[in-house]
Figure 1 (cartoon, rainbow, N blue to C red):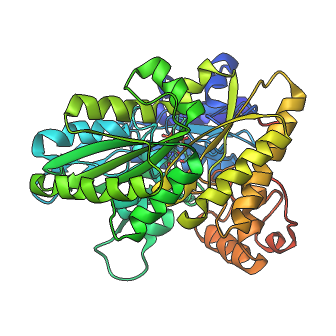
Figure 2: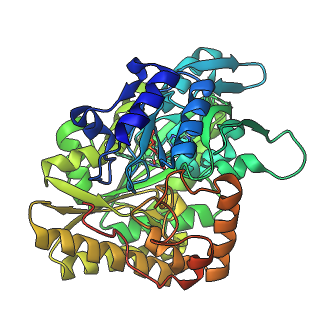
Length: 475
Ligand SMILES: Cc1cc2nc3c(=O)[nH]c(=O)nc-3n(C[C@H](O)[C@H](O)[C@H](O)COP(=O)(O)OP(=O)(O)OC[C@H]3O[C@@H](n4cnc5c(N)ncnc54)[C@H](O)[C@@H]3O)c2cc1C
């Protein structure tokens, strides 16, 4: 069967674009969450026609297809949970057009997120969504997960920036959607669909004007709770900075050891505030925010208006997960949201849960969005620690739901959280979603075992019990 599949793929797209050796396939077996199953083949299409040919072969032979961007996903979304074909977009990495006058770009899915902003910069433009992985993650993967990032607070996540898509359905047909079209908004249906509805082969995106002035300020607090209360108060006062991010002491110390951006090492938490707009408005905005921060216990305040200083602060913030390598061999990053005003309680619970399970935790999060990212540190060679991490991850999720939040802010559901979906959706909701999927992917070959609870097909979704996150030995 494997030889037959390989032969068909090679005939269709050429031997140079097909990988079948186990040592080559190993790199396509995992993402930044985990993974263990090897695919039968990995393919590297060069255009939509190749994608269509691959999809037709997979459909005929009943082989699953897993689209893959850079594999930085944190929920096992790009892993071949059931084997089959992994489709990498490494060769579909061109910016097809950049229309500066209309502030639009058309890209292939394998374009790296940051590359688009680099190409747009000479036109005074940039691309809004900036996941911390933006130096490596692809725009196709960003569409797949509806990625956010520090600036989602003011610019929104991918769904607010994708204006059209080209995608391939399970019968190999190439379709186009556009938000300019009347009728159902299929573009938005595909954003965040994690490769389960169609394979995206081109993306139309909005570009934004680079603000004339940008300032990044750093406030130090005694603890994350008071920093979070300040964030609620800032937004509650009607001020919406472009970003409001918090790092606790554990994270600040780890990033400072590497980036030396000048964060205060004795603070319990630091708040990063970015404001953008007209140069004349900057001082007044900063004063208003600093005043609220001080009223909520800010111990110090510093502002950076020079690009180099701002870049160093952002590099530290975006490098936070990598810096954990200084503290522990492995980390598990939870992604959950709570209403912004409940952040102090949520963070308090995170701390309690980590302590109960004897785990070290670091918090770095999109405070303005109420999007928590506790990093639980562990050593995967210690099975007791792995179990403790999974249990703590589930408890954190449950605590956030109890506070009025939800199970993912931006990383998606993938393999990791599929059994947590019934926490927030009723059986009827899930059955409706499954019916939508049936329309696009009647054979359920596009990224199976993702999003929907284990064992679920259309009717079975109703029968799913509530279950914990991080099923199996996937760490
Ligand atoms: C250090 C670090 C920091 C991160 N910071 C953030 C952050 O700030 N915000 C955030 O949102 N995420 C963040 N992430 C998570 C991750 O980077 C995002 O989920 C990102 O969108 C994944 O992009 P990727 O190219 O790696 O996609 P992959 O991981 O390869 O795939 C992600 C999903 O998209 C699907 N997919 C990929 N390409 C296509 C396609 N062409 N057609 C259809 N489906 C497709 C895949 O099947 C999968 O389900 C971070 C990850 C790391 C490791």
